[in-house]
Length: 118
Image (cartoon, rainbow, N blue to C red; front, top):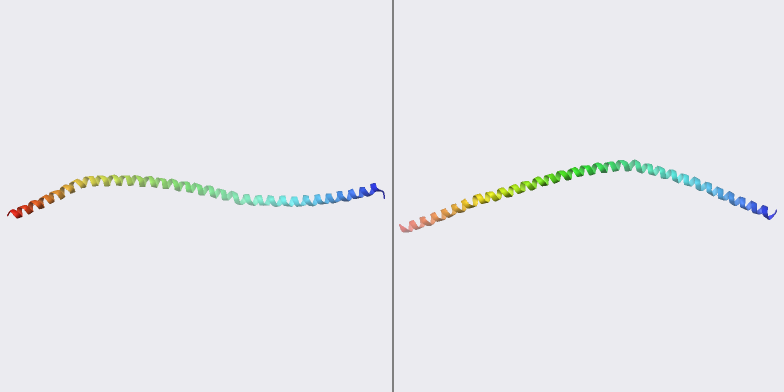
């Protein structure tokens, strides 16, 4: 056998080995791509409903926050009215009560003096 024939056989064997290796890699790559496609489909099947639920929850939370803000506005308005009414009541009652106490005190003093004078 000549050297050229030997080299041709060696190159053919190496080329056959490379072809087999490429075929095995192609099959594995195809399997991996199929598994990735299945995983992506499963993720999409679960992610889409989860995102829809999340959006609905955010919408409900936004509505609740709006309601709480409205309640706080009402509570603030009521507090302001109560403060105003308390202040008005204090001003309206303080003067007559003080005058009443002054009259009672003056009457007591006058009564004591009248008793002493008798």
